Image 1 (cartoon, one colour):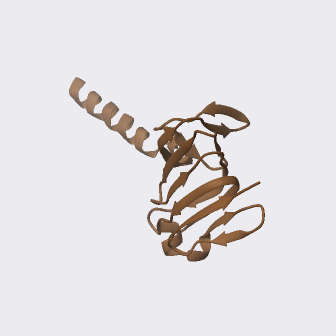
Image 2 (cartoon, one colour):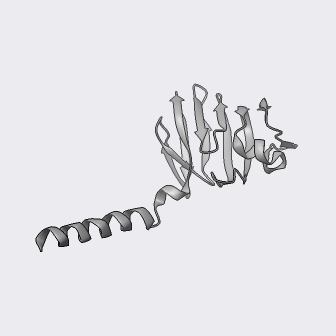
Length: 149
């Protein structure tokens, strides 16, 4: 009887680990590179940012005068921010099955180069970059934004 119980318990543990909600669902991207001074603000708590850090919706990234950061998002969008940048990841949702979602980012200052991913390819109106003076609609392309104070 012992092997039968072991099989049942193992099956239940595996099933529970697959269907239970996970904190990973909040994950929208990953910092791939960070040089110089790079900070991440999440839930009003500021911390140093480093390669390998997971990003979530509403995170704010800032770079110092010597800082730069490279990010890859789960829809395969890629961002590269230069020195003295302040970027808010305002809204991000993505369904990998349907490729539908929305991606809104705000650049208060600095530079941001973007290569759009699946969200903009599937729904061109779904990706937007806001600056203090304008809102850019991304249409499945590469571009750069520079905001000076």
